[in-house]
Length: 262
Ligand SMILES: Nc1ncnc2c1ncn2[C@@H]1O[C@H](COP(=O)(O)OP(=O)(O)O)[C@@H](O)[C@H]1O
Ligand SMILES: [Mg+2]
Image (cartoon, rainbow, N blue to C red; front, side):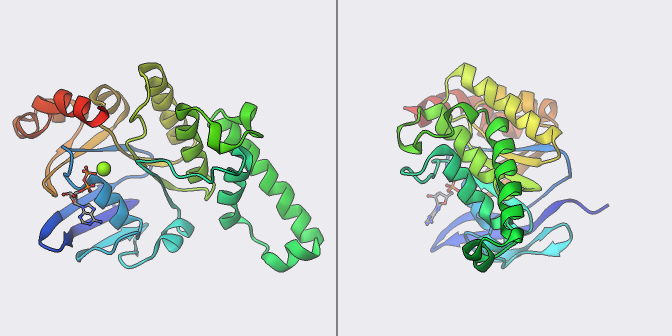
């Protein structure tokens, strides 16, 4: 059986530091995969490498059976990968709606000339773009603030806007880097619900998260990294009782989580 996504033996070195050390994992269509591990374990690097922001030092990456090892981010985006960042990046001067519109342009079929000439093709494109933006605004529950500038938004809204922007490219596979960081418990629960809704709408999800309650409740499967190496992989109940995981991560995860958010 072919997996939706597969990474084979990926290594990423930064000078003498080995951030990812022959890490292999796969993602199956329709699942929510958790990627966990202590600070500095290589989780964000893993996202950077698989989306093409960074090139792996060695290894091979496949999306839907296609080799994407050396594909830059705009190519992985066109092939259906999107990500949200640990620190949300938005255009602060644009409105919520404009931020999502900008993200949607990758999927617009007509080029610039029809847009300038206002051809019928352009108008049809614009109408379908408007409809797509509306769907995303409702999905991330930001329709009511679509006209507000991103700049002044409360933090929880900004995080949801980050997801809306990622949805702009109509992804098959969505990678979320610490989506619940800095959210209060109610917002975290909302976030988990949103992730589930996205999965139910057909998007496969990989999520990096420190909040063990969120991870254990949300994920179908979990991959654990430690010093760039995969040390465990399995269902939440298997991970929770894995001695190596407890020793290297779970046993001290509460302290670390507090330190991270300090
Ligand atoms: N661009 C970079 N240049 C040099 N070192 C980096 C870079 N990005 C990450 N690292 C290092 O790689 C290791 C893994 O970092 P990271 O992937 O951010 O971990 P995590 O997201 O699991 O906390 C850390 O030691 C970090 O300092
Ligand atoms: Mg990180």
